[in-house]
Image (cartoon, rainbow, N blue to C red; front, side, top):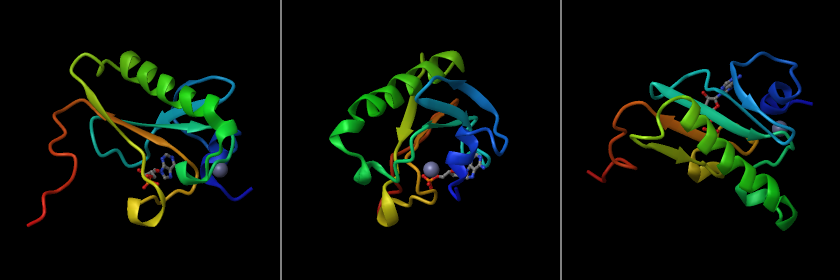
Length: 116
Ligand code: AMP
Ligand code: ZN
């Protein structure tokens, strides 16, 4: 198994785990881009949203519910936060295992840099 997030889900490499259940695990990003930066990851290897199937409907819902729980538990829900899911090359996805970024703890600015 070469996939880094599969290894984290299996406990084979360490991560600062925030929460987990039988289908999803949440852990702090190793290079945080905001005061709170957590990744929510399915235990099942799904390369990206573009690779998900109809049968993954349950786990896709669980990712969102876990993101909500993490935001609540880490104290950023009331003021708000951002969820980002990068998909494949143009989306800037670096790790080819589906994940939801939970970012917050400060105003995050515009969603994307404005064209100059
Ligand atoms: P993306 O560009 O959407 O694929 O995001 C991948 C994220 O995974 C980046 O924010 C990385 O900092 C993060 N990352 C990569 N390796 C690890 C790791 N071993 N533990 C925690 N976060 C990681
Ligand atoms: Zn994987």
